[in-house]
Amino acid sequence: MITAITQFVLPAGIDLQEFRSSLFALAPKFQEPPGLQAKYFLISEDGSHGGGVYLWNSKEDALAFEPVIRSLIKQNLGVEASVSYFETPVVVDNIVKQIRRS
Image 1: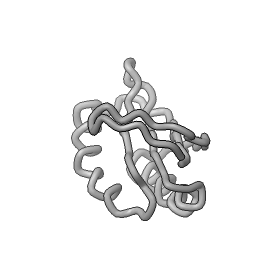
Image 2: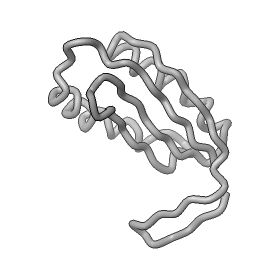
Image 3: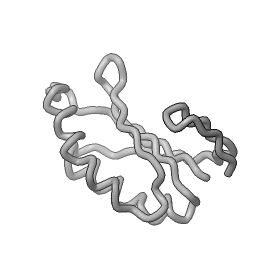
Image 4: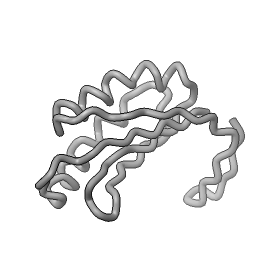
């Protein structure tokens, strides 16, 4: 498994409540990508940064979707995002009470 983390600076003066609502409306787009196990939307405590955490089956799946992620961020917020990738050897999922290996 691979974890991808995106980070970006939110535009100055953005309405955070409106931004949160837009994330919920955008969420269904992340039910479709092949190999995507989970997606978490992020907003920093001070509201200055946003991002996402994605759990993928493989790096190939993650890389195939990266242009879509970058495009969505650029189109919706007008900013560029950084993307980092991490091997994910073990996942503890307390919702389904499961520990999984890569």
